[in-house]
Image 1 (tube, rainbow, N blue to C red):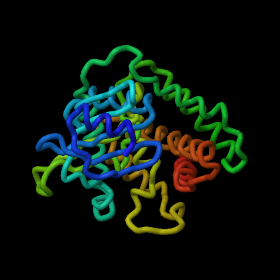
Image 2: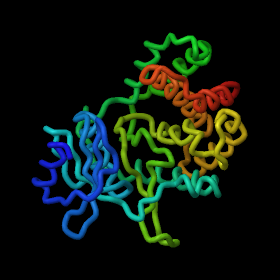
Image 3: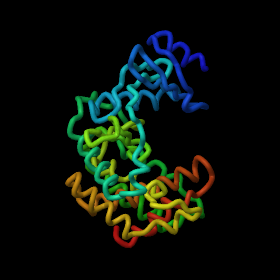
Image 4: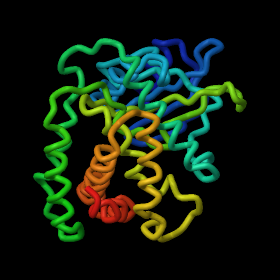
Length: 280
């Protein structure tokens, strides 16, 4: 147990039950009295942004209970049952896509006031294009994504964004029946174009495949993406063209990050970008 987690447990009168994630970022399943909670420790700025976003989202996400800004620690409600959307996506992709679309709409429509400058603008993501010169990624695709990104972020108007709303960050609140609802966890925290929050689930096609395969790229198709885009558009009232443009751009950004952080090309986001390129 890290010193930071131990201090948080004492300060907030929490019993740490299980270390769920270790390393640079530490995540503990815990209890505070009769309530199940999560203690998250790690990068101070990342935890600060997560705290700001959770506070803005109100009841559509896990509730923020405490935030130690000095030490970079959060105490967050643990959503139970807590299973994510991937099992549903494997048997009913349309239903899981609609759930994410409705959650996007809910996250954006029920926000609490936010202090100016509390979260970075989405436009700052574009800095990755300035560092993109790896020959493993098609230069024409990267240039197209950079141009689209500039257009998509030209409007200064925005809302608090989750920033990473894919199947693993949408969890079940309930007991497994028809009264259950789905809530968001682990936001990155940005301010920008609302349509961006539809992109992570489209730019992460591994989670959307109905069967496992060592060659994920073969399971990515424009037809599958277009079906999901149509469902998201109906659930959110966003324009299909804008959802498609963000899916393409976010997929390229995901691969740029993979190259920058891990010196490898993932493959699945690149396959999605190549499938969508003719239509954006």
